[in-house]
Length: 283
Image (cartoon, rainbow, N blue to C red):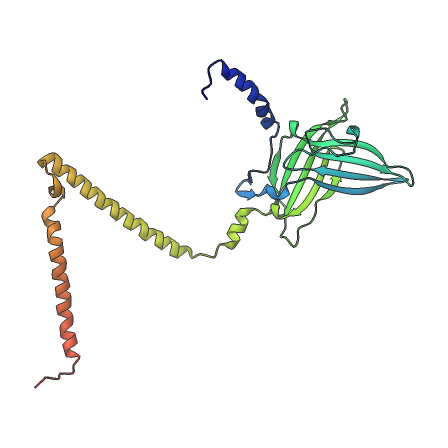
C-alpha cells in the first residue's frame, strides 16, 4: 500500500506512542555492557529480584526490602495497595516495614530508588576485584524542600557457578541503596577468551608474518610487472592477445630452461648411483 502525502501525518500520530515508549526504556539487557576493553553479559541478571535485611531499632525492628529489575520496570504487586508499593516505571523499590511484638506490621516508607524516567545509568569497572558497578537514579524522596535524590548502586562481582550467590543489601544511607551480587555476569568475556587461548611464541609468529608479507609483496610486484608491461605494449605497439605479455620471448624460453636444469641435476646424480656398485663390471 502506498501512503499519500495526507496520510503520512496520521500514520506518524499512530506511531508516536510507540516511539515515546521506546524512549521511556533507556536501559535494557539486550546488548552487552561495554566498559573500556571489557564486555559483560547482562542477560544473566534479567528478572525481578527481592532481597531484604533486618535492622534492630528497639523496641522494634525494621525490615528493608529491595525489589529490583536491572533490565526493565518492576511489575505491580497483586493484592497490595498502590500506596504500599512504588509507582509505575520503577526499576528498584525500597520498602521499609516496622515490626513490633504482636502488633501488626506497618509499612513506614516506600521509596523508588531507580526510575526509568530519570534513570541516567552509569557503569564502571570495579577496582578491588573483577566485576562492574551499575548506578541507576530516581527522583527526590520525599518530595519536599529538604528531600534527597535517590539512587540504586549494584556491584556485580565475578564468580563461577559454584561460587555464585544471591544478591544482598549492604547499605542504605538515606540516598543510595547498595547491593552486592556474586554472579557469572560479573566475569567479562574478554578475560574468559584470554584464559582459553594457548600460550603463543611471539618470535615464531613474527617470522611467519614476515614471510607472508614477503610473498604478498612479491605477488603484487608480479601483478604490477605484467599489468604495466601489457599496457606499455598495447599503447606503444598496439599489441593484442599473447603479444601483450611483456618480454614474451623470455617467458617462452622458461620451460626449456627449467627442463635443462632438471636434466643437469639428473645427470649429476647418475654417476653417484653407479659408483655405489663397488666397481663391479659385468662380464
